[in-house]
Amino acid sequence: MAEFEVPVLSIKNLNKQFGSGCPRCQDGESPSFVKNYCPICGTVYACRDVSFDVFPGEVLGIVGESGSGKSTLMQCLYFDQEVTAGEAYLADYHNGEKNLFQESSQQQRYIRNNIMGKVYQNPLLGLKMNFSSIGNIAEKLIAAGNQHVGMMENRGTELLNKVNIPVHRRKEAPKNFSGGMQQRVQIAKALSNRPPLLLLDEVTTGLDLSVQASVLDLIKSLQRELNISIVLVSHDLGVIRMLADRTLVMLEGRVIEQGLTDQILEDPQHPYTQQLVHSLL
Amino acid sequence: MNTAYNFAFFDEGSKREIRRATLKAIAIPGYQVPFASREMPIGRGWGTGGLQLTLSLIGKNDVLKVIDQGSDESVNAVNIKKLVSDTTGVATTDHTTEATLIQSRHRIPEVPLKKNQILILQVPLPEPLRYYEPSESETKKLHAEKEYSGAWLMLFEQIMKYGSMTTGADHPVLVHDRYVMAPSPIPRFDNPKMHESEALILLGAGREKKVYAVPPYTKVVSLDFEDYPFEPESFLDKHCRLCGSTGVFLDELVDEGTNETFYQCNDTSYCIETLNEVEPFGVK
Image 1: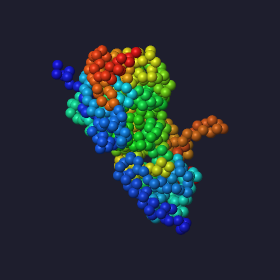
Image 2: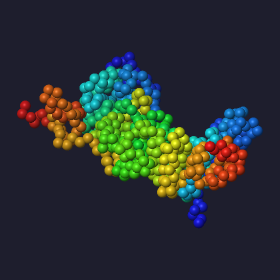
Image 3: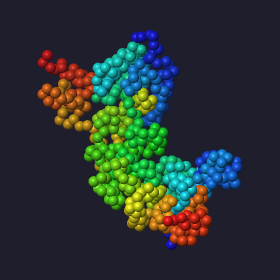
Image 4: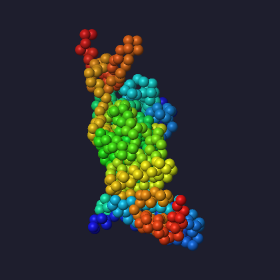
């Protein structure tokens, strides 16, 4: 049993602020705050004291309104942004004994390339639009140390098959693809080196309903098949309900409520969560 | 020699600044060192990077050779030679073995270089990752973190599109197991000559304001894949129609009248030297 209780990813007291802060808001709290913004010095406290664990094979959902710090949190996890303070530990990196945020940028790149995968809301950020789809997948494989073209081509083709991109279009550039297809290429790329942890940032936002459903189906089936852990950010409660085992609710940079997804949706405790759940159509 | 100019055209401060950048480049093989590229009496993109290196290094006892795509007599090579000899009075030569400084555009001479020689290559685009990442500040980070998947990705794309690596020239190399470097648009044929070269190789990009170097006896490996190894151009079964040489880089020429294809040494001074060696044994 003990083995199951070792988290894949463990985040402790993550803080991210944009701006230097002033004496009146140094502790991230001040009566004059407008939401999480200090009007005196203009500092935005995007993530305040966020802590959570992700366990093997678990899908952790993060919901919250726009500006609640969800995406900033994800960017910090993938080292796209530097954190102001906080710790992160990965079970697959030095047995979870090293704080990822303290590692050198080379090491952080190694972690991104080998232990994590990320799907961005905007495919422009996750893909090289002018390179072929299979090349995009190969990029991640090469970064993880692969040197064999035949092997990478096979792996890429296999993954594109899995995400339902027709084989004859695998050498086409993603710029020729529809939004849904681009998103699926991104998923294939993120999965290419079998990362134990996948970060999904609003993957279905902006896709039409049928494509949304197929992308969600795909994520669900891949997650079951490969038993990967997923951190899933969305402001769409439908997506969270369908995919997430456990859910965090964020507001103004803080985690205000967390628990099993059913519990959050059926019996919300915090007034904001109640409002969020009740506004579900 | 024109005495209206300082020796070697530049003022001493300018030469010192360029030499300082050069020293740094030699100390960090393959690393692109920024330098203050000067205005030159020739246009940027016409060899100003190489010319600035030549002018900063040349001394009274040097012998200069300038080649342009293998030719000693093309307009660009002749003009650069004229400018340097006019402002320094140093001797110029066509013979590779006699030269101490060799400025070259897009070729490494056929005659193996020695340790008393310096090869200066003119570089149009010093950044091997530029096509993959347009932003200079981003490519700097990639170099710093030794993140070169982009360089391999470009080769992978070529294999996907055309079935083989199609870099005709400027095939990227890994220098001293650290920096990926653009070897300037020399043909793949010349890439292996950089490996463990006895001569110091300097590369100057005037428009892009970068200097980089391959010090003598440095490991230089052309990028490739396990199942697609790097291969230089092959001229198997072909020889120069003038001097009969094989195993050198040959130009393919087509006679438009007869539609006949023939081959000729690209390195003109090598071709002439070979011809002169053969001649005494001839009937004449």
